[in-house]
Image: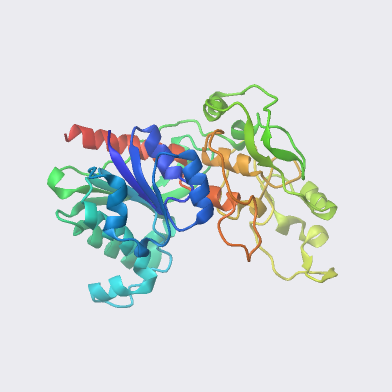
Length: 376
């Protein structure tokens, strides 16, 4: 069985996709304690190192690996602050804003895996006029004992059966001594899965209703729902946020595809402490009602306040967000459901929004597995 290490794993979206493709995740790591709870409850056999990756030494990894050879290292190190301010390579590596990317590289240097997969935001390609992606590719090409043949591509989640139009940069490297090139998955789904198709079988609850465990109530309506429900006998994490009557009235006025700005004159946000006056701060993606008959836009970490249910006058539940990310119903999220700004750790909503959609990860993993097995 091919083995993987999952770095910056979050709650485990990439790990799950690779597991579906037949990879054995032998170690994972993330800094967030709520991700630790979610990950270890869903992958109880995978050791998890919780903490800043730079605080771990090779021996911390080795004691969990028992001498096993690592085939693939996967992960999405944050690169938002990546800086090319220092032109000399070692100074770029020393820049604290670049630390997390180089921690990912350090692990590749330790184990010389046959391949790696790195996921990141699409904006990576335009950072510093394309200089950042060039530097990243150069570092990977020279990493470890052999260096890597590296390619990147923007993949769209809805091309792989995910009911979401999220786009991400995927960078794949294959070790140079294997003498083969990275391959990206072909589009696996001609018909896009819509929001309605993804969530219509879930219990129909209003604001403030729902529970951490509920019966389904309806039979699955389509193949996507059958796949999501395959190993689950109940609905978890399906609790709707409580909304004031004022907010519910606002939601009632917002049509599909429209948002808060479209009803601002009547229903706009008010100033904190002064409800008679409108706020001057306007966000275009706040309270956007999704189209039922299209895939969702990108489900980001802030999706709990970004989007309104296509038919109901409330925000999405964590389980509905998980469905839009292609997490199956037996994948249960731990930690606080929502959080206040001063609370530590990622909420269930943030864990879901930060994740790589498992179905997209599966297609990447399946294609990579084919390349590596053909090389054996």
